Image (cartoon, rainbow, N blue to C red; front, side, top):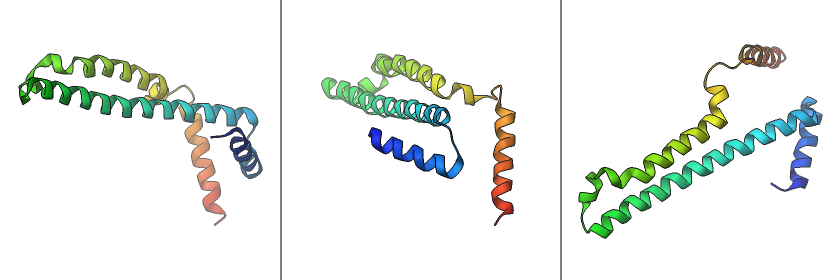
Length: 117
Protein backbone atom coordinates (compact mmCIF):
# COMPACT_ATOMS: atom_id res chain seq x y z
CA UNK A 1 0.00 0.00 0.00
CA UNK A 2 1.34 3.39 -0.95
CA UNK A 3 1.96 6.07 1.62
CA UNK A 4 -0.72 8.34 0.19
CA UNK A 5 -3.29 5.55 0.42
CA UNK A 6 -2.31 4.86 4.04
CA UNK A 7 -2.66 8.56 4.89
CA UNK A 8 -6.08 8.68 3.24
CA UNK A 9 -7.16 5.58 5.16
CA UNK A 10 -5.97 7.14 8.42
CA UNK A 11 -7.88 10.36 7.70
CA UNK A 12 -11.07 8.40 7.04
CA UNK A 13 -10.65 6.34 10.21
CA UNK A 14 -9.88 9.48 12.20
CA UNK A 15 -13.08 11.16 10.96
CA UNK A 16 -15.22 8.07 11.58
CA UNK A 17 -14.00 6.91 14.95
CA UNK A 18 -11.52 9.46 16.25
CA UNK A 19 -8.62 7.02 16.09
CA UNK A 20 -5.25 8.53 16.97
CA UNK A 21 -2.12 8.33 14.87
CA UNK A 22 -0.48 6.00 17.37
CA UNK A 23 -3.45 3.61 17.40
CA UNK A 24 -3.46 3.55 13.61
CA UNK A 25 0.28 2.89 13.46
CA UNK A 26 0.03 -0.02 15.91
CA UNK A 27 -2.88 -1.57 14.00
CA UNK A 28 -1.10 -1.10 10.67
CA UNK A 29 2.06 -2.67 12.06
CA UNK A 30 0.06 -5.66 13.35
CA UNK A 31 -1.60 -6.16 9.97
CA UNK A 32 1.82 -6.13 8.27
CA UNK A 33 3.08 -8.81 10.67
CA UNK A 34 0.04 -11.01 10.01
CA UNK A 35 0.46 -10.53 6.26
CA UNK A 36 4.12 -11.52 6.59
CA UNK A 37 3.16 -14.73 8.39
CA UNK A 38 0.58 -15.66 5.74
CA UNK A 39 3.15 -15.07 3.00
CA UNK A 40 5.66 -17.23 4.87
CA UNK A 41 3.04 -19.99 5.23
CA UNK A 42 2.14 -19.96 1.51
CA UNK A 43 5.81 -20.12 0.48
CA UNK A 44 6.34 -22.97 2.98
CA UNK A 45 3.50 -25.02 1.50
CA UNK A 46 4.46 -24.58 -2.15
CA UNK A 47 8.21 -25.03 -1.70
CA UNK A 48 7.79 -28.19 0.36
CA UNK A 49 5.30 -29.67 -2.10
CA UNK A 50 7.82 -28.99 -4.86
CA UNK A 51 10.70 -30.53 -2.89
CA UNK A 52 8.77 -33.68 -2.02
CA UNK A 53 7.54 -34.26 -5.56
CA UNK A 54 11.01 -33.50 -6.90
CA UNK A 55 12.45 -36.28 -4.73
CA UNK A 56 9.82 -38.67 -6.15
CA UNK A 57 10.70 -37.59 -9.68
CA UNK A 58 14.44 -38.06 -9.10
CA UNK A 59 13.87 -41.53 -7.66
CA UNK A 60 11.45 -42.46 -10.48
CA UNK A 61 9.06 -43.93 -7.94
CA UNK A 62 6.74 -42.98 -5.15
CA UNK A 63 8.86 -45.00 -2.73
CA UNK A 64 10.63 -41.86 -1.52
CA UNK A 65 7.30 -40.64 -0.14
CA UNK A 66 7.67 -43.28 2.56
CA UNK A 67 11.19 -42.23 3.56
CA UNK A 68 11.39 -39.98 6.57
CA UNK A 69 14.30 -37.94 5.20
CA UNK A 70 12.05 -36.69 2.38
CA UNK A 71 10.21 -34.58 4.93
CA UNK A 72 13.18 -33.21 6.85
CA UNK A 73 13.04 -29.78 5.21
CA UNK A 74 9.32 -29.51 5.86
CA UNK A 75 9.82 -30.59 9.48
CA UNK A 76 12.61 -28.17 10.39
CA UNK A 77 11.16 -25.30 8.40
CA UNK A 78 7.84 -26.08 10.08
CA UNK A 79 9.47 -25.49 13.45
CA UNK A 80 10.56 -22.06 12.21
CA UNK A 81 7.09 -21.39 10.83
CA UNK A 82 5.57 -22.34 14.18
CA UNK A 83 7.92 -19.92 15.94
CA UNK A 84 6.96 -17.19 13.47
CA UNK A 85 3.27 -17.90 14.06
CA UNK A 86 3.70 -17.75 17.82
CA UNK A 87 5.53 -14.43 17.53
CA UNK A 88 2.62 -13.01 15.52
CA UNK A 89 -0.38 -14.67 17.18
CA UNK A 90 1.12 -15.92 20.45
CA UNK A 91 -0.15 -13.07 22.56
CA UNK A 92 -3.67 -13.68 21.42
CA UNK A 93 -3.42 -17.44 21.45
CA UNK A 94 -4.22 -17.46 25.13
CA UNK A 95 -5.85 -14.85 27.31
CA UNK A 96 -3.58 -11.81 27.35
CA UNK A 97 -3.10 -9.37 30.19
CA UNK A 98 -5.68 -6.92 28.86
CA UNK A 99 -7.97 -9.45 27.18
CA UNK A 100 -10.86 -8.79 29.56
CA UNK A 101 -10.69 -5.05 29.01
CA UNK A 102 -10.70 -5.46 25.23
CA UNK A 103 -13.69 -7.82 25.36
CA UNK A 104 -15.63 -5.45 27.61
CA UNK A 105 -14.98 -2.55 25.22
CA UNK A 106 -15.92 -4.72 22.24
CA UNK A 107 -19.27 -5.68 23.77
CA UNK A 108 -19.95 -2.11 24.87
CA UNK A 109 -19.33 -0.81 21.35
CA UNK A 110 -21.51 -3.53 19.82
CA UNK A 111 -24.32 -2.79 22.27
CA UNK A 112 -23.96 0.93 21.56
CA UNK A 113 -24.28 0.35 17.79
CA UNK A 114 -27.25 -1.97 18.20
CA UNK A 115 -29.15 0.39 20.50
CA UNK A 116 -29.18 3.18 17.89
CA UNK A 117 -30.66 1.04 15.13
